[in-house]
Length: 256
Image (cartoon, rainbow, N blue to C red; front, side, top):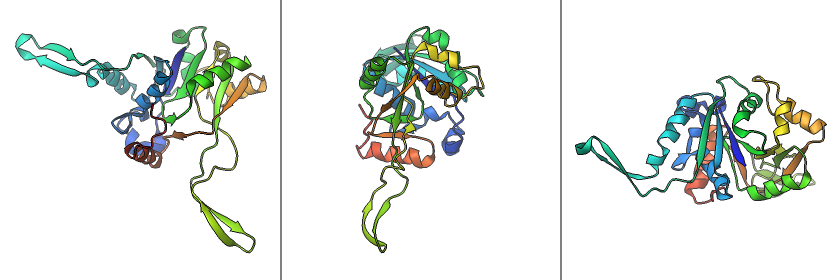
């Protein structure tokens, strides 16, 4: 089963970083967040990736063009016509297909454009800016168990601020550190899709989270895999710094 990653957006809410490079290449620790995401899937045996490029997609192509060298020791012998000798090959067993899906194409349009690379097989789909401790094998097993055309991972993000525990008379009895939000479940990405999903996408200007998902829900073909564990998107610089702090402190729950 191939893993499709949406990596073409402008990343305007984290423009402090994305004006120089696409958001999936913003580093957490010593590697881009897209590599963190790929490592999650790779841990469960999914190593065939199709990456949807758009804004500054050429930088993602350059990154993967040199990735094998980044991960290996190398000798350049200038005495012998610049011979290159690779040592200690330690790159992941990934196959990476990079597809230019258009600079201004919406998320649904990007998914539609990669159909030739997926074919008529089920596939995994996620965003290029969110990490989770989710068990991909359990997600796929859940999808296979219900027989519908699509599964979306649902989670309850923590609130942005801590909360006060108040009793009658406004007496403060305690504090909660960033409790869960209002009880609602949100789209955390980490989808499993059957090829019938392509029929719900009209073209480049289709937003995947609107007509396609709404249509699947209306037709009773969308199921939610509830995941209460760690999930964190990287929408803003605050999010990026939070993920960076987790990584440096050894508390990165998504690390496999």
